[in-house]
Image 1 (cartoon, rainbow, N blue to C red):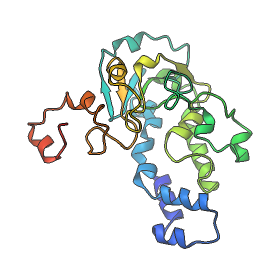
Image 2 (tube, helix red, strand yellow):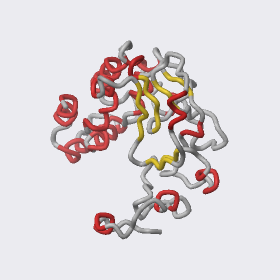
Image 3 (cartoon, rainbow, N blue to C red):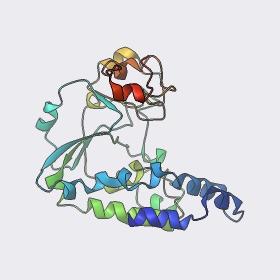
Length: 248
């Protein structure tokens, strides 16, 4: 909450005041404009970094974003040996889809900044948030949460120039060295920002993720992919009707 208030206070005056400042570089102005959005500075976007504190009696959780469709039984995830790692995740640097699965740390972190270039390898694989197995028992033995907040502070001090805005970049830093790679079957990504993925491939994945702007409940959704979500929706439901969600 404190960091939310600090970000807003730092950029007090709103978008017009930020744009009117002609002493700053364009990338700094762009970062500050983005930072005004609740999508980036809302406390709820960072809440996952406190999972061990939120669930003190649990030793393991499966974390699911709200724009996922689960298409298979997830119970086998509990049997995965994490080899002492904290975060079971699909890496996004290799795979048949070179558009979605070609992400390394340089895709998210600003390696022109010395704080980043001194500490990380630009060609190291990135991984995905959205469908993760978190070993909370192992997590509690680390300083992952503290590292996350330390780097948020560094980003604030650097005019939000260390990474692309969002929760994944600081997550990539905080969980560095604590990730266990899981089979990509468990998390197919990118259905909300590209339609190169075939319907058949998406249908055969265990979990599909509509990450991106084209959510399946919006008019801008990709028509061929929308049925993967809409087939589970009861469009006669009173609440669903009031949301004016398209059935096809």
